[in-house]
Image 1 (cartoon, helix red, strand yellow):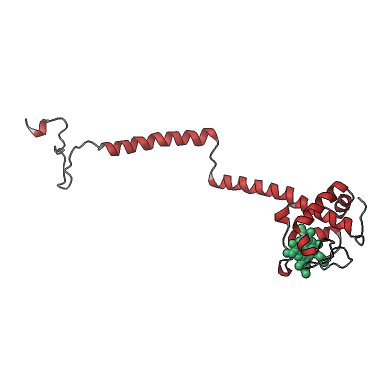
Image 2: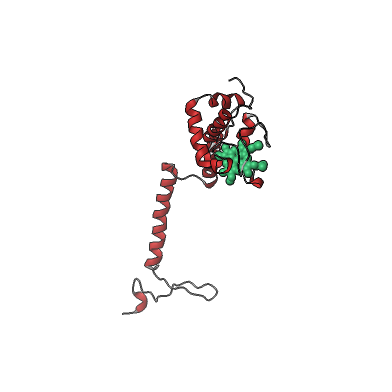
Length: 181
Ligand code: HEC
């Protein structure tokens, strides 16, 4: 049988010639076709998943969403209480008891069991290096004094526990000016 009359002779040359170049009329290899069809199926699935489920956001949107979430948490966590609020908390025995526990666990080692200081400052006298209003004390505890060895407690304890331990300090220090709630 003549090779060139076979329907799918892989060696058959097509009739045309461009610049003297002729082509075979070969079938596309299966691996190539599978890759093509596979890509098409994947694209359809991907498109449907992306458009219909809402599970995937464009990169910038998912970043924006995360940042907004983070900021919300920060605001909820980071709002500094007022002098009046801290004084009010210092009159609440439950808050003071909770603050004392936080003190014993985190602060006692440096500031002493009687709060009279050691490595850290005396916290029951009238002398304050970083301000002696309740909010000053709150800010010092929250941000720390890194250069002097006072840790930054805000991120460790969170705003509400910093407020509790400060309420405990206020309850122990008779020199702090109380602001009526
Ligand atoms: C590793 C030791 C250490 C620990 C733990 C520590 N502090 Fe301090 N703290 C210091 C030192 C040191 C200073 C003095 C900083 C300075 O000289 O400016 C200080 C200062 C302070 C001040 C400011 C005093 C002033 O005169 O203005 C407050 C308030 C305070 N600490 C509260 C706390 C509380 C509350 C905790 C626990 C949550 C705590 N500290 C845990 C070492 C410590």
